[in-house]
Length: 449
Image (cartoon, rainbow, N blue to C red; front, side, top):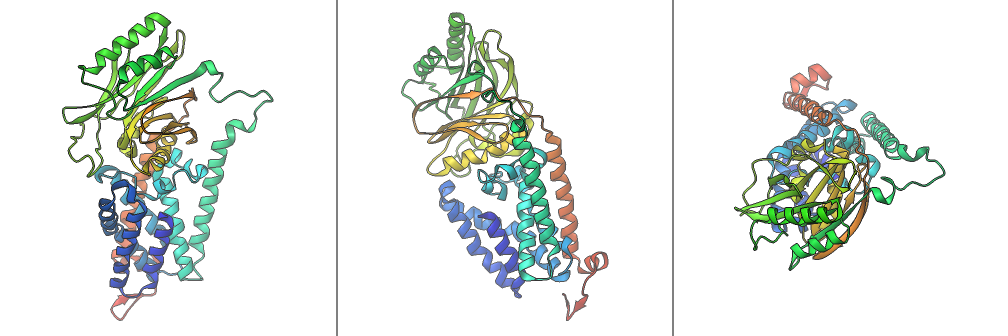
């Protein structure tokens, strides 16, 4: 949807002679995008998507001016993807919606091979290639002789898909004749349960421990605090379970306290990681105070005596949509997310979080109220997805080996694209400079052509 939208807008930017006519066209585009994401914030989604067209106009106008000024120069098709990607990089830090409206997020769940690009360049890499295809495709439609940019973008897409295919399928290319389940034999699986808004979540947790589950998760704000501070109670429960079975288990608690949404990773030794939700959902959680500290990574043992130690971290729902937060957790083997969604958003929320798993090379386990509970492996494949409203959902998650990733490359790509965006914007705003550096048709009748 977003790629088609970008292509159409770039095409209109080149075709429409009157600037005011193009700017007017962006209003219905914003409305249509708002309707396509209606389930998120409904009327507020319309306002946000229309408002987003204001900064995005910078990218479209740069594409308009540069392609009109240098119609047969293929490199000018890079202006739009650089500026557009840089704007979405800024959204990671300054917009309250994070990355959920970016072209990459819109693609989530539709192309696992292209999604692998985020392992090297972050989700910004996916946004860049989609934006380039849109800009180069639009320029090709507007000018039949301008084939260079379109061919270059298609060639880049082909290389990325090829590299993504190698990364995704390499582990199974030289398999032997004996089938080995992903992650090893069943004894090496995590037994996970997700408890969602139950009348007695404490006793339900005890029942799941007795049933042999090793990771028990509560959905966002699903932990009951009416009987006092929950952490000591669940710590004692886990200690009693260990004394009886010699099995180490982990509980994810989530509750509302001091006007904040809190997350705790609890073992028999107490809370090994806690933090308050950093990014409340705009409008819907306007009364929630944001946390100051991000989540961290903890080393724990999960399973029977002798089980290998793993590094674990966690996030609360919407925080997982902010790369500036999740990339700092890349050393963890497993990310345990407690969340709550609504309406038809649950599935897209699950798909969007494939990026967090791929960027960090880690297993992501999602426990969700009114959405999709499940698990995503380090390659971004959804290995389990179960619709859940209330009650208990249980499933097995293999102990996938953590993949090596380099988060600094993600930030490096973001930085390079942002610098390139500034240079392209300068060339777009200063016709004399672009004509001197790139060549051009000159200035006629008071405007650059």
